Length: 278
Image (tube, rainbow, N blue to C red):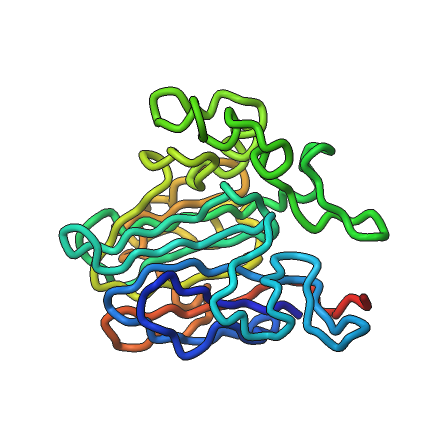
C-alpha cells in the first residue's frame, strides 16, 4: 500500500492533505482554479512504537495520514503545479531537485493552449542510485535517491551562493546528469526550466504513481493514422497534445475525470502491497 498526499503553498485549502490509495485505485480531487502546490507519494508506512503514522519514504513528519501543510522529507519525487498562472496557463512539472523516491507520471487531459504534454520519471532510480546518494532501509533495499544538494550541501549542487544564478548553475555535474539522463523531462537542478516545465489550460490532470514501465510502443498502440508514439528512451513515452487526442488514454490509465475548472485524478499501479513493520 502507499499513502499519497497534497501540500498547499499559501493558496486555497484543499479538502484533504493526505489519504490512502490502494494499488490500482484512483481518487479525484477538485482543486481551486488558482492554486499552487506539490503532490507526492509516501511509501513503506506504518505505526511506530508511539502509534504515530510514519513512512520510510516521503514522510511529512505529521505523525498522521493527513500532512496538514507539512512538506516531504527528502528524497521525494514531486509533482509541482501552478494553476491559472501567467496568461491563464497552468504550469506543471515533475521535479527531482529534492531527490527521488517513486516513479511518477503527469498527463494533462482535455486541455488547450500551451503544449499539454505528459511528463514524469518512470524509471526506478533507487536500484541505480549512486551509493553516496542512496537511502536504504535496514534490510539494504533502496527507498530513495538523494539529490547532491541534500547529500553534500555544496553550493555548486544547490545553486546557492556564488552559484545562485542560471548562468553559473548548470547541469554539468555527474549527479545532475545521472537524474537528467534517466528522466530527461524532469527537473534535475533548480534552473532546469526550459526542458522541464510544461503548460496547459483548462485541463484535468492525471497523476500516476508507479506506472508500469513503458518498454515498447504497444502499451499505447498506434494511432488510426498509423503514426506511432515517440519513444524518448527505452522506458519513457511522452505524449504530446496531438498524440493524447489520438489515443485512448482513459482506458489505459483507468481513472475517472470530473468536469471542473481544475481537478486531479490519481492512480497507483504496481506498487508495494505491504506495510513495513517499524
